[in-house]
Image (cartoon, rainbow over all chains, first blue to last red; front, side, top):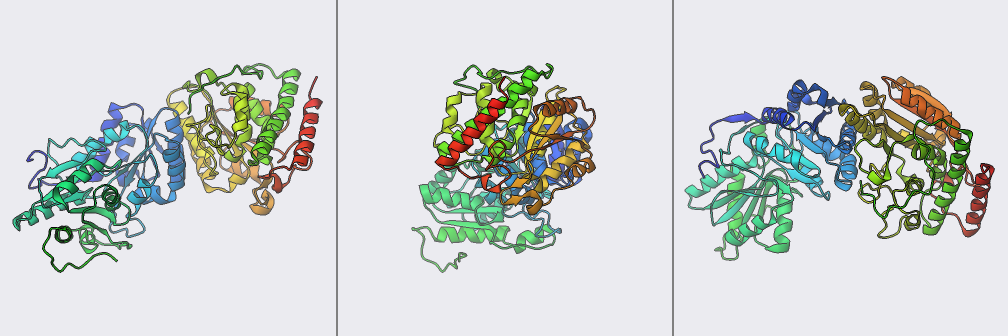
Length: 333
Length: 300
């Protein structure tokens, strides 16, 4: 697994810069790609595409509904439009456009959702995006993809462009540890087994993948062998992998930079509930708005930490029918 | 867009784009506008559901677009260089479906299935189901911005295809209309023509009562659009305005078409009650007689 995961991580990369570079590369590979922005191109680094391909870049101003609708028109003309703004603006302000024309009509528009999760940390809860996975996932025909590091962005973006239909591509603003090695070859719709283990499975997406790996290594020191699986595609969910892990490990933990309501944890819970019920603990923002602050401090304060994953794994394992009864404080309710 | 199937030869005459506007052509399109209103009346009466008022106000405009102005080919519904029409006032789609059927996109008999279960003719336009529909509509306000995207795509491809957007006046209340208007002007989209079906009535009253839109021409002009004002039931004026828009360079064009909601039926005209009202049997007969009389006035 050495070339799948880099341990230790050799450094950090600014995800939005990786995105900007990947976008330029995509622009060279595909002439049908058009990039749109609601005047945040210097934030999300789509300005790199603007510099390279000015004739294929459209700035609609601070007008997110028009951003999506203009992209819909471009898709009608055979273009592959990639619309860029902050995640919460797609998920809330422009949602009706997304629902009517992308989800319902199938317009082949890609939404690059910048500054997602808590990553716009200092700007505060008005800008942080913790309900987007739940909202976008509920729409028929939408694909929802969350890369976890710079390499993942580079490898997934061309697939997002090639996907036949609308995609919500959720991006982090900040520097994230490089976690994937050369052998990481993600495929939209397919989960990736990152670390073996039989005692429990930690399923993570985005920034929480690196943190989940850290939690699993800590657990290993205590003799608990937790499997780590990356689910970068929240929809369509790799239900086969979820059920497989439930069957083999008997306890699941989800970890996401999102509310515990309706995102990765919600999707996995729905799958388990219908197919193979086992104890599940969800690590995420616990149904509350957050606050301003440094990114890492914010993640820790709102329970998006390796501590939280370690605790959740212990709780999930203790709830296995075979487990010896121990005192576990429920996180529910 | 759904592919064309069960195609029938168009029964209705198409006057090729570019040909002169003869008196015969003007009379024929005017007469057919009344016949198509009668068709819509039958559809809404048959299903006991639909929107008559806004369908009647747009009849002549759609006639001019589909049977003369727009370069479309039902046999090649997805021809990349076809002209585009975004029918933003989706609730009035009974008239759009009627035009598409008579243009040859699907059998005229299929119009009877309007709004029925399993029909391709949904309550509001759905591109995946209905041949000839370019964009979903129903939630109001989308048309201009979608048209902007279509016009930008055409420009990038150096295609001469044109984009037409049909708006209601009520949906001018919606902010995204003006977002789209700004983007169109910014990019100088002279291959985009917006037609406002300015019938002066929206769901619960006149536009002047509900959300005053005047001075409407000045609004569009101040957004850097070229504005043409016409009588929207006068076929000669519509055809001339569309030609003028076609010749415009460097700016998008809006045609503000003064129309009458419920046009052609005396008791339906200018009444919010007929935005979504369904006629009784007696009203149906009376309306049908008036529309037939309207058509007769244009017969040679």
